[in-house]
Structures are given as C-alpha cells and as structure tokens.
Amino acid sequence: MKIEIIGTDAVPDALVVSGTARIAWLSGVNAASDAGGAGDAEAQARATADVLAARLEAAGAEWGHIVKIIEYVNDLRVVPVLREALRARGGNTWNPARTLVQVDNLPVPGVRWELDVVLALPV
Image 1: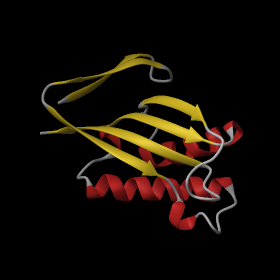
Image 2 (image 1 turned 90 degrees about the vertical axis):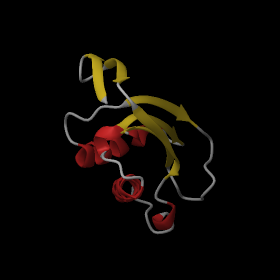
Image 3 (image 1 turned 180 degrees about the vertical axis):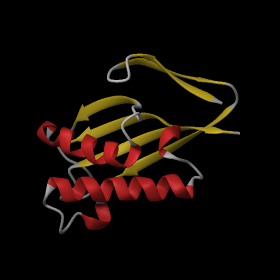
C-alpha cells in the first residue's frame, strides 16, 4: 500500500491510496472524557489528540494511515488550535485530506469539536 499526496504538501489536491488496503473509520473522536474540566481550547485539543492516538493504536494504525478527517467544530476560531495539536502528534509531513463543518452544538456539553477519521491500513 502507498499513500501519495498529489499537489503541494501544504495544500494537497488529492491523497491517492494505491495497492491493497483495508479502510477503517473512527467516528466521534473528541475529548469527551475531559470535557468538563477542559474549557481551555489548547487542553481540549491535546486531549483530543491523545484520544485519537489511543484509538489509532487500538486499530493497529499509525498517524500516517489517516487519509481523511472530517472536523465538526462549533467555533471556527479554535480550528488552528486543534490542527496544531494534531500536527504535533502526526508530524510535519502528515497532512490528510480534510473537511471542516461548523455546527451549532455537539452531543457532549463543553466539547468544542468532534472528528470522523478515515484510515487506509496495509493488508
């Protein structure tokens, strides 16, 4: 399996997965367990990155296997905080395709965002 970025690393036009791969979805990734005390966006972003790391490990995946993230956020001003926390874990060359959706509310009070993550895993 090979994941290739088409376009620039900063703004990819496409991510192409070639070869044989298994596709996995991680839904509802957020800092829900820490939401009550994490009013601070940076703390919640780090907690979200920790939750994603744990779910990747449970799936037998690595950050480089993430090919798409759908970000549901209730305040667009905190998107850079979330993305920086994820990049700190994923590395400077990590750049999955993304979709950003602003929502009024999320299911867990106090949570600022929720992620749906698509993985391409080697067979």
